[in-house]
Image 1 (cartoon, rainbow, N blue to C red):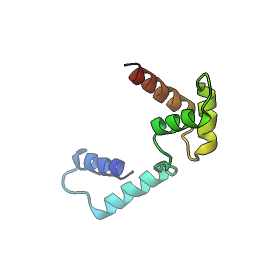
Image 2: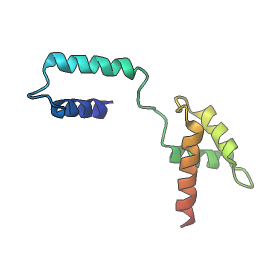
Image 3: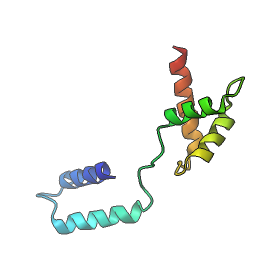
Length: 102
């Protein structure tokens, strides 16, 4: 969130405003950011690559693990997954598949 806030402050300085951002204006901007982004935080789970590798290793399925079994394992093992977990998982599994085929 800090990088985003710093970016907004930087844009605010160049958005037709002459001079530095005053403390009052900075506070107003930060309050608006908190209003709009009430639920933003950094998740505490490992990277998707690490979670996928762990799932495959621990599931240890004879014929390989399906996307569904990997997803179920990750959902049971980790909290705080994004609402787009399935889409994010697809993306990372495709990247891993392509990388490991090289």
